[in-house]
Every structure is written in structure tokens, then in C-alpha cells.
Length: 586
Image (tube, rainbow, N blue to C red; front, side, top):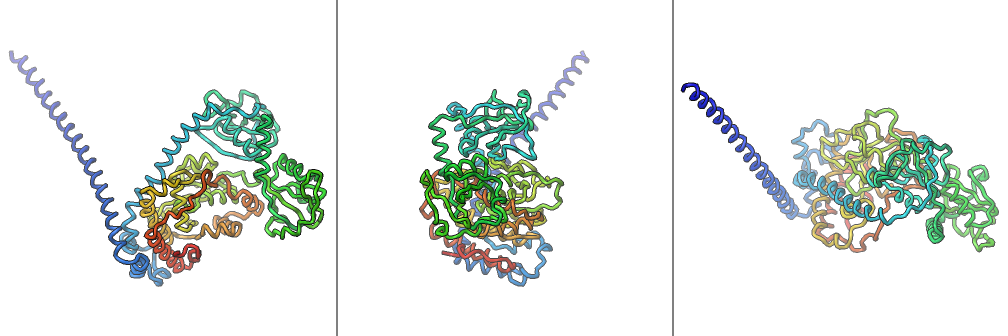
């Protein structure tokens, strides 16, 4: 009798402990859920409060006067403090107190907004593009004939014109269309995701089984292999398509001007041809993949811009008017002292080869800018001028697909020449040993970033976007970020090279030489001239043109003008060149 009673008592004790722990686990789960919900509510309330505080402060007095008083009230913002203050020795708290009040009130909000707006829309846009590509996949027809599998020499490519990379959606038709649009004869695919173009076949064939990488966007299709190219010939097009390609090729040609003939021009240019007609000369140079057509009766020359023939000193076109018409009606030059120069759609491939640094760098150099200030374009220029990849603090798959292979590397890998960043703040800035600070007109930068936000790197926002409530909210949050970004880097940057976007556009070679020297890379004149020939890269916006309406209200202009005055004064106080005149309040 005692034994069954003891067993029952033991079972009940175990059941009590089990129920006790189950109850505790239930209560803890409920508490965590309540804490999470209350945290979200508090976070939303705090954001709302910061907006109210910012608007109240902005209404106290004219913005530029208020900022000026706040700046020079602090020991850091006065001229003496800027010249001789110990910036590195300031504590974090004092540094915050020294900043203008509008900068502090926006800081927390901006970090949330920029991460949400700067990254989230990319995923949505890529999903939309993925749907479009799937629809196109069934309608595109291959435009070329398969030639075979070829060996690829990475150090000296035959198909040198790199078009793009796409790790998710590369197809044979996509690559062929891109090469045909640029009027190349051959398209080659490798690694399942890389597309190259050219007019000359690689010299060495490989076994067909060595091209075994499946196309990333087309199951069952082969897109090359490891150091192997699947090559297609594009010249066998239908008659109508061929005519359309020829018309597009002529439209893509650009008259560069009339130039004085260099000494020993016959030996300077790598290819020549008897100039029976301008069209034949153009076709000859395009087939040879040269970017320049140089005509001088009775000869045609093909080549590249060089130090001896850099196309900087364009002469009056009237000097090249002494011409006669050939059998086809085209004008050709008689005078031996002058050349008429045309630009073909062929890419100058002397500077397209890029690589990672051979040894890891222990010096971290930032390429810092406000979003929309041309950071991606400047990365393109630096990569082509130096031959080394640039890195990024972020990972943008769209940019990686366009050939920025450093986008995939960790920003502290030490394999890239500099690192793109839009970050600001003491801790983020002091991670870098030096920086190129790129500044652009805030009106242009805000519109460029809003275009990117709405339509991607190469698109334009529609009129509906500009008239939506999102545009005023964007300006309200991002305009102050433009100023705080520049001010933070001027305060905490250890070694700075300030580059104004507009100055770079107006004097490309000189400014790029400054940047290359700042990066401790020897200046290569041929690469610079090649880069100048490819300065736009693939970064011109496409689609409908920019809006002709002025999207900025008078209140927006008053706010932005105050930020411009502030940044201009701090630049001059730090002995940098002030903002260009076109930035000034209008």
C-alpha cells in the first residue's frame, strides 16, 4: 500500500515542477512580445518629436543667420578654433555640443531614413526588373551563330570590350543584344555571368566540354567556363537588322573637330587605309576596333588619342573647309597640315583592364560624398585612370553587375584603391586614414538622388513623383544631411582632398591627376586619355528626360541656401576653396 502511494506522490511532484516551468516560459514569452511592441511605439513617437523640434527651431529666425550664430558661438566653429583647435582631443559629448543644433536634431532620424531609402528601394526595383527579364526571355531571339569554346587570357583579352556582369540574369540573348547594339562582330560569355564584345576571335580554341558553366539567367544554356569563352558571331543578321545597325553606327559617330597634323603622323597611328570615301574609312576603323577616324586626303588613319595627338587644341572648323567631294559625295581634306577627326562607337580598350591591388593596403582611403553627388561616376574615372578596383562600404548588386567588382569585397579587405561611403559622424570618419571629399551643388545632388530613389542609377523620376508628398519629405530630411555630411568630414577627417563635382566636369584631366596623385598612384597619361575617351561609361541616365519644372519651393530654397552659406564659410575657414559661384543662393 505504501509503495503505490509513494509512486503517486513522486509523479505529482514532477508534474508540479513541469507546470511551474511551463508557466514561467509562457510569461517570459508574453513579456518579450509586450516589450517589443512598446519599443516600436516609443521609437515612432521619438521620430515624430524630432520632426516637430526641427520645424520649431527652423521657424525661430532666418536659417542662415541662426546657423551663423550657432557656428561661431562655439570655440570650434570660430576662425581661431578652426585654425588651431585640437579636433582629435575633443570628447564625443563636446563634439556634439559644438555642432549646429539642426545637425544634432536630424542625426538620429537621418541615419534611419538613409538606410531605408538608400537600400530598400533597390530590392524592389530588382524584383520588378526580374519580372520584366522573364517576359523578355521568351521573346528574344538569338542574333548570332555559335562559333565554339575558346581559351581566355585574362591578362590580354582578345574580346576586350567588357559590357557587363550579371550574377543572376545573364542570358545568351542579353549578351548578344548588348554587343550588337554597340556594333561589335563577336559576343563572348564566361563564368556563366560575364559578357565581352569585340571584332576579333580569340586565337586558341578549347575543348567544348570545358565550356560548362550554366548561364545564370537561362537554365540549360552554356555561358563559357573558368577562363573559357563561349563565342557567338553576330554579323549574320537579317537584312533589316543589319541596315538598322549600320544606321545606328553612323548616328553614334561624333565629329571631334579639325586638328593640326602631328609630326610623323604616318608612324603615330597604328592603322591606315586608302581613303576612297569617308564611309569606307569609318567602316575600316570600326572593324579594327579603333575609337578615332582621322581623315587626310588621300589617306585614312585609325588610332587612339595620345600625348602627341591629344585632341585638346581644336582649331577653327573653317581651317578644314578646304575640301572636295569624293565619288560618294562625302567631304575629304586636301590640306596636309590638318586632320579631320571622328569618334567611332568603338570603346577605347587601353584602360578597361582593371584588377585588385597586388598587395593588401594598410591605408584606408575613403571616397566620401552625399548621395547623388556623382560618387559612382568618380569611381568609374578612378578605376580607368589607375587600373585598380574601388571598394564600397555597402554592397550594391546593380553596380557589381556593371563591372564594379570591388563592390563584392569587404570594405576593409585592403584590395581596393579607395572605398565609397556616404557615412558621416566622428566614429565612421575616423576609421579612414585619408579621404577624397566630393561635393556637388545640393540642388543638383538632391534631384539626382531622388531620381535614383525613384528610377534607379540610370533613370528619371516622373512628374508624378515630383508632385507627390514624398518629394517635400525627402528634401526636408536630406537637405540638412548634405550640409552635415560635409561639415562632419571637414571636422573629423584626418587628411582631405576636397573635389567639387562641377570643377571635375569642367577640367576633368587636371582634377583627376590630383586624385590619382592623392591615391599614391603614378599618373599614366595614356590611361588618362583613354579614360577621357570613355568618361561617361555606362552612367548616363536613360529614358524620358529630366523634368523641366522647378521642383523646389521658395521655402525649400531658403533652407538649402542657408546650408550652402554654412558649408562655404567652413570650407574657407579650413583654407579650402569655397563652393563654386553657381551654388550661391539664387
